[in-house]
Image (tube, rainbow, N blue to C red; front, side, top):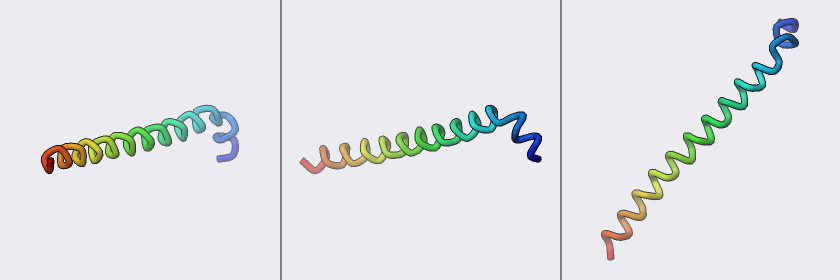
Length: 46
């Protein structure tokens, strides 16, 4: 296992970074959807 980690450290780091960026993108996308819904509701109230 230690040999695998030492030989493929770059790929492991890249996978972790990809997972983090995917999580950030997903969070921002869901936040945008909720914000758009709130903006629509606020326009309808006026």
